[in-house]
Length: 118
Length: 112
Image (cartoon, rainbow over all chains, first blue to last red; front, side, top):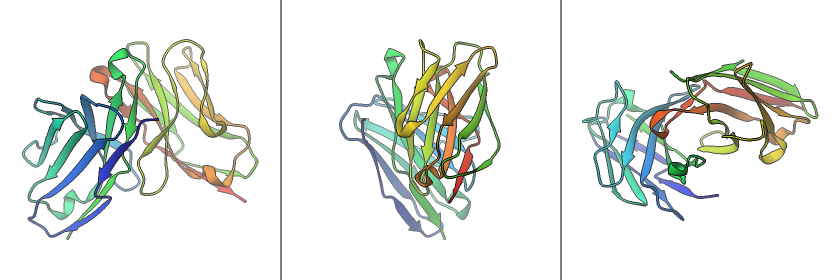
């Protein structure tokens, strides 16, 4: 299957700093990528839909100024957590759609990035 | 609105026993349904999916699921559990805008 790679896998930062997480589709082009957040022992919550060449679409309750998403190319989307605070500590997972528009596509998920804010 | 309910946050089976993870969904349109597996500190891996056609879907690692429209269910089964099956399993339904809504997850424990 298609490969989606996230970087970094682990990141620890100080409160008030910004952290960037990259999501790459390695062997296919993804016009749409999704960013999820997963709290410990909980399910994945969709944060936003990243669209190549346009603004991201955020889910209700997600601060777009806090979680900046950029999808500058067909293989790369980035999530920047700005002015991070301890409550932003979480596991962030991206996914990319291959063949989604055809109706039978599936999402491929990255390995996830664990953010710890001290 | 589409939603997913997974019955049982934890399921424990003995090695070699049947695995049954339950998933019920609600959807106002014909659903696309998915089962994913997540190992600790990793992303999600697709086990299987139902879009259209045959209601019994076979996936990787010996798992299968049956779409039952009358019961709005998409339960995941495996005839014989292996230690390596211990993980967390998520059922998901595709909603508008090509998004997925996930169930709360079921942690599968396999006892030796």
